[in-house]
Length: 471
Ligand code: 6PG
Image 1 (cartoon, rainbow, N blue to C red):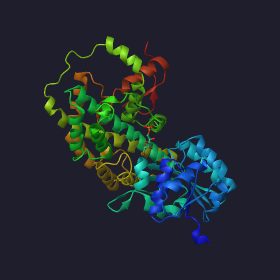
Image 2 (tube, rainbow, N blue to C red):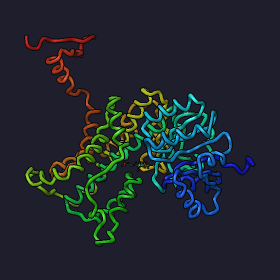
Image 3 (cartoon, helix red, strand yellow):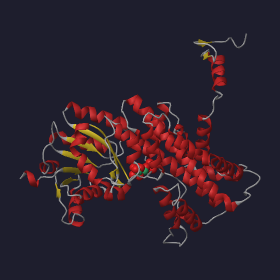
Image 4 (cartoon, rainbow, N blue to C red):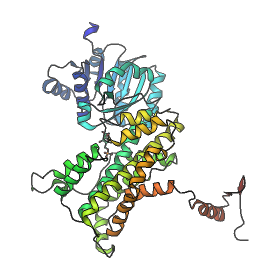
């Protein structure tokens, strides 16, 4: 009897849940599935299961009875209340020693709360970031689990079999206690927002500057994807730009409203970075630009009254793509640096004990921010596990030295043309601020002391000081 029971259960047969169930089943894992709407389960079994070892449960009790003990339940429902609802139902059918894994984009503070509640009941809990969209879930995502280490050990072989692989290494690792996994996924999404904004800025410069059409742009990104910028987001940009609209025959991208929506994980990264006082200016800029894109009516009015630069062309449009390619690479590298530095800070503050090399390793495949440069980032943290900021790694210093001038060129082109490039500007400012021996914060401290007697430190003495500035 036990032999026919399922190795793992999965709740939530949306596209991510269904695909992950099929993915695991293809690796020989016996999967029990449950969805609150039973028709969804019936349709899945009827149309997609195709003889794979997947067993339906049409009530939560029936579902739990299909699982072998100790039971493991993976939850694939939208982040938020739905996760609490599923977790609320589970204690009736599972108990101490069983394992629950939340595979959604949950806020890390919710994960901490859920982990604590379940731990009190003796139930093991993992918060696991799953990246790679529908196709990743089906063919190999990057998995970012955190929480109960005992729970991870129990399902490690299933996760390793289902995750993406790079050079034979699975893109999954136990990241740390409590919400470590969901925190890493949140920062992944912050970096995702940053890189998407940076790519969008180069697209804007090339289309509004020299006026390249979508077809030409597609071939530029396709070429970039064969160089040091190689990565999933560059690859799909080339494909997106090549796509024609079925209705009009025009490039589909030209028919899409310029209004960016968001579910918010990038914004959460930005918010927690502020909380931890760890600068992630390119991620902040990306969130801000998504927000600003929504002010369409205001933008229309402002476009009629606000002046731009007097010159609206650049001297050598043909050489623009090469400069942008290197400048974009610098900005992308600096965005990873900001995300990694936030992770390091969070690891100290929340006591996650993150292994930064492992984070870079599991991001090399399956996830949305996978890119060739992650191999270099991994190498930087392998060589110096305690590295505070990867911009200080000799390897990264060398790479940035080779393209920081081009980053300045991107910013200049944006300024000259009156095209906003806040992602590149913020990355450059981060770079220049980081390498500044002296920043003007001394003046800020003097001003604070002037109006609020907030005191300042001196460069030549210990302690804090106040000056009667008006005397
Ligand atoms: C991933 C994606 C995925 C999802 C985001 C999109 O790693 O597979 O990040 O989690 O597409 O939720 O986020 P926004 O809706 O906020 O852009």
